[in-house]
Image 1: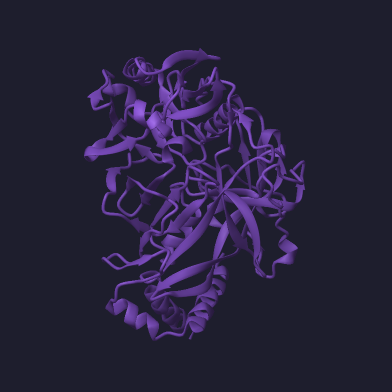
Image 2 (image 1 turned 120 degrees about the vertical axis):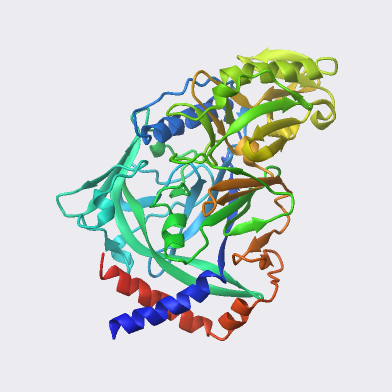
Length: 488
């Protein structure tokens, strides 16, 4: 009887999996005082890069990063997730450079109690959620080797983790299995309140920069390629497609949208992911400034244990290996020198500009495998650094990396659609006004919804799905999760 009941639930979930996607609104966080030094952003990026590389098999690689002291708004994108029963909201940073979703536990020591970002911090209390269960040491995930996590077994038979960062700061805690609640868009303007059982981290200890209040959030939402990322957990059970997308708004108050599904846009170009890598590595092949290819040895972009090009939404700025950075800056300076005043500000190449940068500075093209080019506007490689002698000072926003990995952070990712198509092992992108609505694919065919208007084309799968009451589907999902949990 149990097997029959489980089979029926799986049948209905198959219909759900091809007819739904999850839409997550994003916000951009700003500090209360409105500004932060560029050196602080570089230090924060350096910290996370040390953390990322410690997860690589083969040892730790330290990035040599330099920057300037520059007042800059903190480019921290976060979203809200609902965890537990009843569901509670948590503000978590969107991070494609790590795998785990973790939030601060109520028992956490040395954890921030307030945030300079103007958000109310929340703590996860396992005793307040009727559906929370500890992950036991006998669970396969606790004995498996994960490239970006350090799992261990505690004396209380709880599967625990510990992340150690490059400067000695870090976080530790234990894994919890509980409900993630979200709105599932079904098509034909239908939205269902859905939930799924997931495993995430409950942080009981934080140290170093994680204890600081100026940019504190409730946790980190890892969207990496590992098995424990939420996208991997949900897609492996057919709850969502094995693809997610984001569009991060760069100007004004920021914000944007993240979708567990594929944003559809005719101008999107795709480039394959480098296989067998823990992060989103792309094959950068060349760089062009104003249509002219730079003289850069392609081997400096080759992927190895300590080289390559990574897409990472958790990095604020952008980083180029020295062999590419130097000719890049030289080409930009040579192009604009007749119209601006080049200057060096605390080690960075800057320019005093009296007009609009879009009228003076050239377009830049990052050229990837499969003929996919990423076109950068001046605002995608420059940062505004204030005013001097009646002119605006703009500085190169890319930082120089001496013998390391090039990283494309929010400076480059903003104002673009990015599609992380894990099913086909590729990433796509297109320049886009992220204040507009987007079309989102809900099936493997050409069906799509408009996120703003929630319109959808008709299909046989859609008609079949409309015959099932949404409340009954929600009940079936919860029933399946409870059955699955019996085998944890």
